[in-house]
Amino acid sequence: MTRLTAILATTTLLAGPAMAEMLPLEKDELTFGFIKLTDMAPLAVAYEQGYFIDEGLFVTLEAQANWKVLLDGVIDGQLDGAHMLAGQPLAATIGYGTEAHIVTPFSMDLNGNGITVSNAVWEAMKPNIPTDAEGRPQHPISAAALKPVIEQYRAEGKPFNMGMVFPVSTHNYELRYWLAAGGIEPGYYSEQNTTGQIGAEALLSVTPPPQMPATLEAGTIYGYAVGEPWNQQAVAMGIGVPVITDYELWKNNPEKVFGLTAEFVEENPNTTIAITKALIRAAIWLDENDNANREEAVEILSRPDYVGADAEVIAASMTGTFEYEKGDVREVPDFNTFFRHHATYPFYSDAVWYLTQMRRWGQIAEAKPDSWYDEVARSVYKPEIYLEAARMLVDEGLANEADFPWDSDGYKAPTPAADIIDGIGYDGRTPNAYLDSLPIGLKGDQTVVGSEIQG
Image (tube, rainbow, N blue to C red):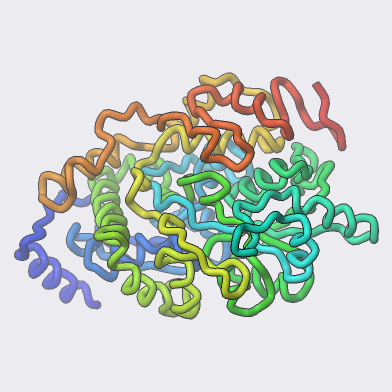
């Protein structure tokens, strides 16, 4: 689309019933990055449905090779913003890995991930898994069923290798959470050793999401944690079985965010609000009328420019069901959630959870007071921008007043124990008490020194 065509399209759209309030934009030509995952959907939908154009934004979407390349692109300005792992803005802001102040005014989704094991591992796990009345494996499946399998592999001299997508990814923390809840040590990080494999019974390492199935098939790893469609791809290929979704691990857990540099937001406040408006509209579209638009979303995402997986594979999880073993299809209506349950609001408590997991496994080397967690969360998550965008959409008749948490202090109500696989509740207001309640992981003033936990 030429710039003139885009301007004419904008004029036409503005003349329609869904008339957006045009902000004076500081920058209107933007390039956003993404990784080929189902949960980049708000970006694709905002582009394809014309929501960016409605805001006067001329957006180019570019797939990135991996999460590090994506983050570097945002930091050096090649990308104006990107679909990011929620841990990336937090880690960069506290200086873990690449150092830069990244912020988010928009949370992209809830849930959407799974943990898959190879067929051989699954067959070894099955005798340890209770069955339901129909003889199917009873869900959620505990990692306790995997523990004797790992012990057998180790007795045979085979390290039990598993893949996750990035050291500060939700997938890393979810895989570690699941393993630890089943009594398996997933390993620690230290300032001297950033492998995350100190004291590990299962050895976790990075594999880019689209390469997960092939790496599993090659036998390089025995299981992995990843977002869709790469768990369902393993089922379609007949090479693996998803054993648990993150919805079962922690009901309605936060997933990706949309990240921008703090400098970009400071220099382009109106543009940032316009971006957020377009993304909120996309999220509403994805969830409205009981997911009525999901088939169209699947078709969009299946295109090579976006996720590029077969539509059937994307639909297997995105349209309200999830396939575990071949043929074992179950209803999981909230597996991909883009707007319900305040999915798009950037809650401080979500940020705090990621920070607790960084501390739990040694990425944050030393104990921090509760106030530190709150300060970092507020420096990265920007609900005030989100609510400003939401207010404009409501005033324009493009969103419903009742759909936004106007009076929130930024913290969700504590997650009840029943919603988390290990039966341990989470309250973002008391991060240190939460860390102390977890049986495996660093607590209090403990640190990792060499190969030992001290303190």
